Image 1 (spheres, one colour):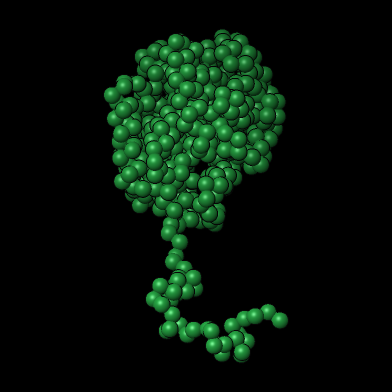
Image 2 (cartoon, one colour):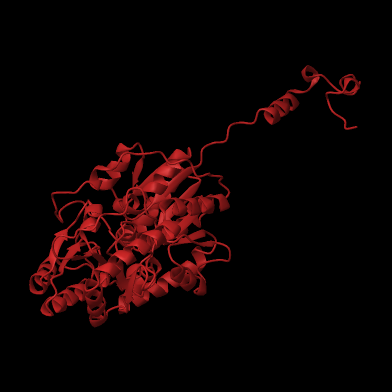
Length: 446
């Protein structure tokens, strides 16, 4: 028989004291054990080098964290999208960090501001997005009494796409600092190539790297779109206007196809990016489009309308992408994609099934693949159906958010995936009538 306080003789034992006879500290301890204090909400600071990045690629994660009861704070340079977050009740803290220049006094100022931000906000978790932001956050969190840090490497970008002297020196500096700062923290990667490269370089400790497979796609919002059978087919390239996105290869392939008598039409969709060292100047882009017969639609807030109009979505990038969100969105809308056999890009396509892969910086191969697809409309529809199935199986935003919450749990913070609310369609889901590259900048492919 087990001993318990419910037995009659146990209550009457002479050595057992009544609660009022116990010392004050003992009564408090007994009360605390029976009535534990409520668990405080986890405070999470999400940090990026631009407000559009958090809005474009991590909006669903931010809103999910908010629904779990966590205290969510966002930080980065202020812009149009930071005001949108504030209108939703999500606080935004300004942090100045440059995306283009590397001036020593500016970088030291950014580090000092970040340290002051962490001391003022006192978050439990800092989640840093992009390579530069992650490196700066790791440097600040190396100091005593720092919060847990999660680093999301959303592609290796310009440093690994460019082979000039400046990029080589910056890569070397990244490896030296990263080997000291990154291994103690949890690391999230969008594709396996980036994970394996940084692990071989000694930047990722065993058991601290997670591959989540892109930023995910909202499958309800990006549903299968009907095909436009009237008029010539459109081939669309949606991206920031960067050299490394393969813009020049695309316009030259378009010109070659038009010279061969193709009736297809070609369009570039996306904003100019003057803040990037790889950005294409506006006059040069206009000259390419005029000589090669390509339309430039500029920034479009209604990407669903763009995918509905397209027969093929093309991204001949030699940039070190994470996993290009535009390719996943196009696949979710039932459109085949043509992209390069590069890290991140190849993750979005099953070659010959949901789209086609071409060698990077090979205009002739790109021209041949586009010509063969445009000549076989039945193959376009078959690939579009396969692309939708693949996105449903591997790239839904719910899968990506759940994988991110699992990383938080490994940091010691318990978070369950809340039930997603049913929301009305966004206004931007309707076809837009106005197109302008003067709209707020949005990075359309990671």
